Every structure is written in C-alpha cells, then in structure tokens.
Length: 421
Ligand SMILES: [Fe+2]
Ligand SMILES: [Fe+2]
Ligand SMILES: [Fe+2]
Ligand SMILES: [Fe+2]
Image (cartoon, rainbow, N blue to C red; front, side, top):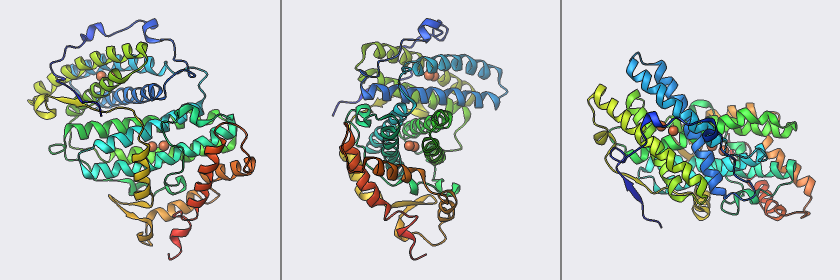
C-alpha cells in the first residue's frame, strides 16, 4: 500500500487568483484517445468534472443567499475559475466516446470510488452507507454493460480494462424506494473528522454528476430500451443524491461549507496529480491543484474574518491524501456476499426478509415496476438474442453474469421476499 501524502493546505504555495484565468486554447485542450487511455485516467476526468460542477452550483447557491458584497465578489471570481476548470476537464473526453461508453466509465467511477472510500472511512455508520450505495452502482455497471453489448456490440470489459467486475449486484429492480426511505442520519460537524466530510462531499458530487449525465444524455438513443434504462437508473441516481446529501450536517454555515468544498478539491486534485500516468494530464491536475490551494486559503481567510474561526482549527492543519483509483474486486465481492440482501429502512438497514409489511417502498415499487422493469428486460432480450452463443469478446463474461442475474431475480424484494405480506 502506498504511503499517504500529507500537506498543510493553508501554507502550501498556490497560484495567485488573478493569474488563474486562462485563454481559450488553454481551456479547450485536445482530448485523450479512447483506445489508449487508462481506465482510471478516464475515471479521474469523470470525477473531477463532477466535482467542478458541484463547486459551480454550490457557489451560485451561496451567492443567492448572501448579501455580503465582498463574499459575492470572491464567489464570482473563484466560480469563474471553477467554470473554466470544468470546461477543460470535460473537454478531455473524446467525441468518439459514445454516451454508453462514458456511462460505463461513470459506473466504474462509482464502484471504485465508493469501495475505496468505504475501506478508508473512519466512521462506521458512514461506512455502512457507502457499502449500501456501492452494491447498487455495481449492479448498474452490469445492466448498462448488457445495453452496450446489445446496442453497440462493444465489449464492456474493454472499457473497464478488467479492473472492475461486471456482474450483478443488488438488483436494480430493488433500488426503487419511497423517497423518504433514503434519508439517513447526518454527520455531526463538530465530531466528524475532516476526512469523513471530504469523503461524503466527494461522493455526493460524483453521484450528482452521474444523475445529471443520465438525465441529459439518455435521450440520445433512439432505442426505447435504452431510454427506459436511462430513466430507471437515472432515478436511482436521484435516490443516491438524496441518500448522500442527507449525510451532511445542515448546521454547517455557508462559509464553512465553501471552505470544505475547496478542501475537497485540493484533496481530489492531489491524488489525481500523484497517480496520473498520462504526463499531459498530470500537468493539468498539478496546475489545478495549485489553483485550489489558493481558493482554500482565500476562503479560509473569509471564515476567519466573518466568523472568527480559524480554518486550521475547523478542518485541521494536515490533509492526508491516500485515495487512489485501483482495483477493489475482492473487497466488492466480500461486501456483495454480506450485504446484497440489505434493504433500507429509514436511517438504518435490515435484511429483506425482515421488512415490515408496511415498508413504504413496496407500494413505490408496485407503481414504477407496474408495466415491467427495464433493467430486467435488457437481461431477457440479451438472453434471447445470444441464446447461449459466444460470438465476440465479452460474450462469455456477460453470459455468466446473465445467469447470475436470472438467479438473483428469483429472490428480488418485489417477488420472493413478499410472499408473506
Ligand atoms: Fe475547481
Ligand atoms: Fe449508478
Ligand atoms: Fe449512484
Ligand atoms: Fe476551487
């Protein structure tokens, strides 16, 4: 295991804010080559695009809720930089990478990000929340992989490059819940470690971007099965945004949260920079890391000025960055063995056989799955199309996964678990 890297975010030298604006050519860089790119380089692009979009959105919300001209001005200035960063990062994706290929990348990010963060999350409750979400995105990766094979004849394993398993998790059919069922207990801002807060905000940003991506791009497929699958999984991502969003302490002040957002960017650019294998992108991560150090310090000053609180005291003076995109196959399999049967019950979990008859998600599932279920139907269609034949790379892997999916279906909440109701 690599040694963690530690820095003092309040003292490291950054790039002065007035030197952070770049010209159009610096903003619109040439994209990576999808045939050459490392799966985790693509993952970093997807993650950091999501984080920059969260910074942009949060900055606007903050602006609309404060009457302080100095804060509004600094928000406008840092937000312009965040926006340029977002455009640069998203522009690294090549035009020939299809929406579905990018989608496989999003779910790979969700799996390997959540798994790693869960392994290193100090708070046991937060860790369980992460495990729960993990098994759902893990299943999405499989369902979209079937769709990729069905529509584009592409081997999903060529995209994840063997680093992430493509097999069913907790079946997507069972991810649909009555909205309030997704509300968890939030961390306590004075008790939670800064690292836990960074974990939660990182995941929240990633899930939000995933939700927005599916909502914005699902329509680009003419095939009704594709549109329906994007509708179904996109809604689960909305559940995930609600789920992770309910973990943050609502009593954090707007300013405190702004500092936390910048710290989250420092954390994430730091691991991108440290682990990037593409030298050109490594340069981008390094430059953006130094922009974020300045943002964190400027916002830390505002916290000191307007709330009389030192950022070093609120968030600590040492930031240890140990995250890395890496294989988590064994870990995920272990969580899958232990927790596939868990279902959500307010701010806690229970095994599906113990669900009360009055579990509100039963009625919700009856409603949305009334006319069938896209994530199950794609499995049936693929089963009929391939009929056990192995025609091109990836078929064998998907055939095995499909058999598991049919087996899991027998015990889905919607069916087997409800006999005694
Ligand atoms: Fe940023
Ligand atoms: Fe997902
Ligand atoms: Fe998700
Ligand atoms: Fe920033």
